[in-house]
Amino acid sequence: MPGPVSQSHAGPGEEAPYVPPWCYKNGPKMCPCGHHEGYHNDRGECLLSRECRCAGLPGDCYTADCDL
Ligand SMILES: [Zn+2]
Ligand SMILES: [Zn+2]
Image 1: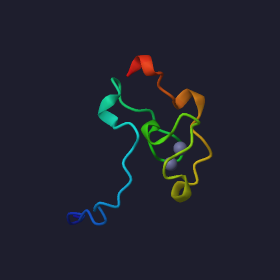
Image 2: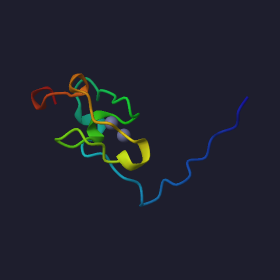
Image 3: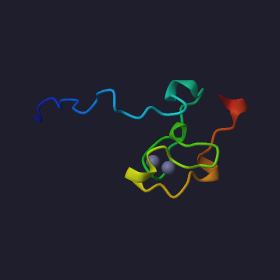
């Protein structure tokens, strides 16, 4: 049995997504980079791309504003 994992590095330095997951009616779609679409700007660039090396949010991983 693994012990509880402590949530380290959750301080004020954390980057918050542009759109939090609860804003998506059906939940955010996941980008291959490991971050959900809320982390990506209008051009599909990931907010944390320098860490995850996101190549861009694929078109089919994007929820239209009307579905929010
Ligand atoms: Zn991405
Ligand atoms: Zn990413």
